[in-house]
Length: 370
Ligand code: PEP
Ligand code: MN
Image (cartoon, rainbow, N blue to C red):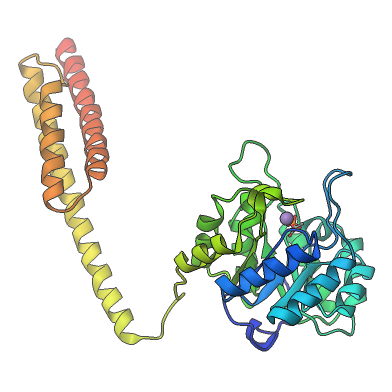
């Protein structure tokens, strides 16, 4: 697939914006106090650089809280002046773009419900022409990589090079543990096609609940994403939108502390040499393991013949019990967990029984025809 995007690396977007990019703040701006207090607490408990807030909310059904509108931009500006945090909002129309830029918003994002509509994306792109503002494009709600790429291309063709993607998951068919299915293969494929495209994960909208935010964030970093966007609120349970998935700034601080950011690779020759050495050890041990396992299976076959000769059943519960207990104890002495050894012997034993059954039946058939 031929995708040509002209992109600026994340570190050139805005002075002071470092990797990983962490964006947090309420799903929706609700009141001046809520926006300011969230910003203050984020500043006090974390070292994130960007405050988000939804100003215009695209709601699935009419009648839900549809966003506070332009007055919220004033609160964001105030929060920025007081805390020094950069600000980010969702834009869905040309008017949103103009107003957000007028109030000094630093980063814009295109929401999932907008990305699905090329007319709307084009309107946003046309309004962005001539500005040098970072724009993040969320994946469309349906798992359509082409549509996501198309939206990125439209914005890029309007001259926006500080461009990135936000992975927020895809509407699930049914019965998913996620509000939006992560389908990780889609952002991974986008990263493969356009490796230099900065990618931010939005665990809040993938999870739809608080408990899954941390593991999704860790996974995003382990898949080499460049940042995360997490919704936070001073009083999550009473949030006017997405209450179940919002967390307090303090909870966010705990999550950020625990996340492990690993390096994708290293130039370090010693590291590579040692890794190679360890991998060849593993290869050798695996060969030995398979040989030993093969030998064990042969003995099991001999046992089958022996039992057959003496008309004895394949399964002897006492013996199985004895093996299991003994191997679990032996496993413990070489630091193997009980659960692992138990699973391993269930597999081995099951296979052994299958093999013995085959042998006994073949033997029987052979005996009958003789
Ligand atoms: C949001 O970020 O608050 C939002 C509306 O998200 P999405 O576009 O991913 O649904
Ligand atoms: Mn939300």
